[in-house]
Length: 383
Image: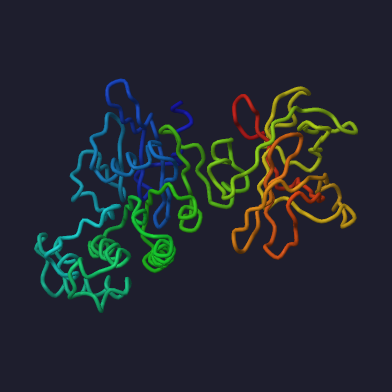
């Protein structure tokens, strides 16, 4: 298990944040098992996964808010494993705003600097700079009760920002906001990172936040980093069934099948007489099609299915055409999701909302074989 959690690339002193063989255990319950990770300076890393996967535990360990069982944590070239949170050179933004209700926005942002004994002029300069970046200048005299949820979260971000640290940690900062505010603040956080260029580590269970914000995403399950990659790679070449199913909305369709042969080339029999050729499929480096009869799972994203007619062209075997019947329609605004079946298995197809389609109508569609994913059913790993 621990081998899967090794994502270190070099000397921990060379990374902005480095975790080495981190073990978090409570008795016989192991939450993080020998996790190693390097985060270069200026990267926006998102820890993504369902509740209980260990993402907040990892973040809180980096922050110094949890006692670790074993391992090391390095920040800006310094081993801070046993340092207090205030001495680690981090700024943290929590899910709850944790603002002082009797203080103004200015005083909330300045409080930590006053406690640290900074000169008044420097406090004013830092708060003013952060307030300008976060569009809080008109609100500096207000109390938290006079602010919206989004404004309060901006104040919480500003309170971390004034510390002038190298690393910022975000623990699901947008989960208490409604959809529109989440979208607005995502843009502001992304712009903030572009403007200041500091290292940011961001915890969320929201795949949209992860895909839009991250330079790299660490998808976690059961305390294990399942895949650490840029958003494009994770979306298009997921390493296993868990990552493939967790990323994407609507989710990737999974079709159970068996490896067979079609015209002398490997293919997948998904049932009902439908055999999908794998001639265009790009297997993982060093691997090839498994033996005939092997149980596999063919994964296809709804937007990677083309509707139309085989007469439109096969593009040198890139597309595999078949027929289906519309079982259900889900209008979503910009798109419409069609539900159909292949070999008795459910399949979802995303089409433009202007696409004319009727319930129970028959239609032709094709898999884009360049964008398909194939997994070993027993292990769940990408082939």
